[in-house]
Length: 182
Ligand SMILES: [Zn+2]
Ligand SMILES: [Zn+2]
Image 1 (cartoon, rainbow, N blue to C red):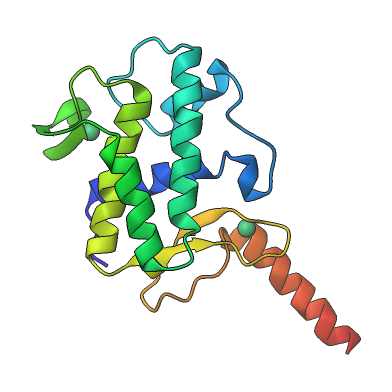
Image 2: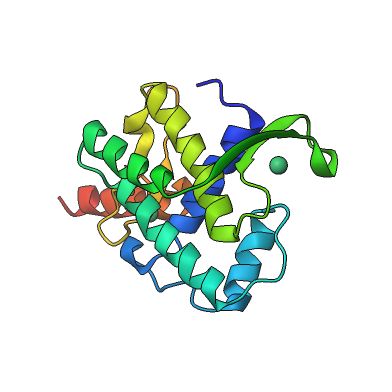
């Protein structure tokens, strides 16, 4: 899967955003402006000014819309859900090479709020993924107590856990113990 730097960055950002949702099994990790600022800094979301509670509300709504794309039961449903999200988003492609990054395209409109910014850039990244026939790579963790989403970038699409060091390792240890008891 020859994803460029932009695509990798956008996919990691949408996964991080969705996994702050309590719908993925953990506590809500986007409940106040400090947590939103942390997210912006962690994901290096560019061109974001002062954020207010309206931004927080909007980002939380965008988060749930993206979660619905990841958990769509089939590709056709994912397409409908992503189109719904994109249809409410102003999109203006623009070439940029800010902050020392190589030339790449931003999709959020000039002056976009952070909610619009995320739905435009992350929405277009997911749209490309679907166009490439890679819908199946949008996954939810198979560990019984974890519903984190992830993008399976493995060659043979074999990844089942959100994180091999945490859920993957935990499940391997559990399987090993079960085998020893058997
Ligand atoms: Zn950029
Ligand atoms: Zn997991």
